[in-house]
Length: 434
Length: 176
Image (cartoon, rainbow over all chains, first blue to last red; front, side, top):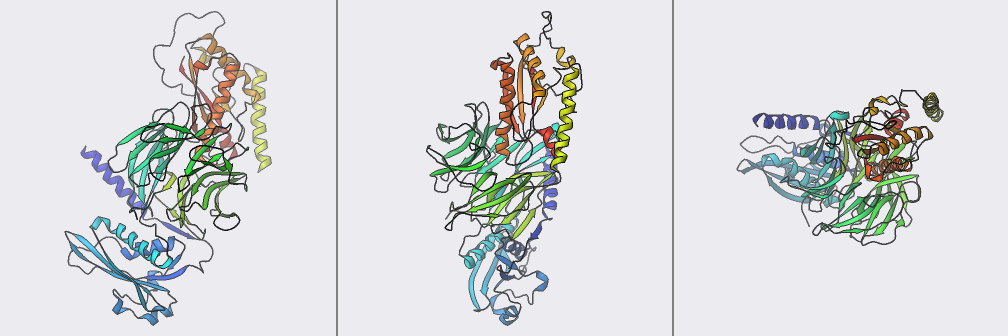
């Protein structure tokens, strides 16, 4: 037992060491990104300084979003920690639109209090002046929440930095493969193992309250769907029919699960009532119907179907009924992910041997496509809850890696999460309800 | 690139045709080690005498045709290529000769595109082999299809030769 604990600790250390290697890949110009300076927030207490560089985490978050261009720390022209110390003309000369300053003080019981302020440099006006208290091991959470508050104050859109992601890792090869379902912060830090298996795991899907994950496991020999509580580890086998059991997706109210079953002999979309486990068949069509996702209002399902020859995205009422085709451009459109307003659909789009992440934007008059990733084997797009970024899986050599890309495609960051193969990302919901 | 792929496939096809023509050719179509037949479901391995001309369990390791336990597919296809007809008829004969035998058909896809869609493709291929075995006299009750999609590659390079080896159905005897 002691040995097990030790190896878990060593593993976590190894993970956190790897998590330091985050790489940001900036594509093209960022002219329209808002310049913001985040000044380091020094520890002004009398105990031990926190290990987390709060300002550094905020800076990285804002940069990654594509909406902001954070001033590198080496270019700072001063180190104010409160509003009265700010020399506005100096920041204006650096063409900074916004400035964030703050400090960390003791909060008792070994905890810390982060006091911070956000300024509009041109107007010399304070936009935010807030404080957050946390235990020492939750300082990254605090930093992400501050980044969220700054993002929302300036852009009017809720920030999604304080969220979590789920993904699957694979190590070894052939018969010796080992799989793990993992959960980490949205920037790849604090990875935690939810479940391990000697058989493939795939398709993690978050419950709307962020407490559970549904996923597919082959541990019984055939595909089966489990729902697991992330905190307690308790889990329930919800679907192990003959044939395929795949593609789970919680309904927006958390009471139902959309899934793919081939118990009839052909993969079809079903909706399971999680209370009674009763199934409603949604599609009944020759062809592969799979990968259902809910429209945020719960009224309809989007899914992949090759009923027209190649895989395309279709839509059907969540209570059953005829399906209509949604994607017409591109030979292969699969793995749909919907934005919170249902207006944008991210897919894995294939042409020949190249698969890229593409977005179909229907918020404007006519549907418009944009390509977000370079290929060549990109898949599994997953929108952040505020649709500002998309997480997806890519291949580098024989290895799977995850990327986070801004919804406008301008900033792409590789999340180096672990050695081995990383795939099947799923961006979790907001961590606090509103 | 395209012509190169065609050439590779053409070569594989030529070897396959030569194998079939030679009839006694014991080399399998692709250079894949014999499939692990998996755990027996218990108590069904019959070591008793078999009828003249009928297959027995030992033939699974000896008979050149029965040793062919992997069926390969073209890109995005689930139709059986002609070179696998002989394998379909000998495995179907085995199923007829030994009604207690059971086969699991493990369907697989290459890595390209959606993992969930590829689960469907793998199942389609498994179903195609199941249909072919039934058309040759095997019983549906002896056959189970499991799809692993792209989750169980035998080859992990991202090129056509490797993808062609992964688009396959493995014939696994769970009871001999």
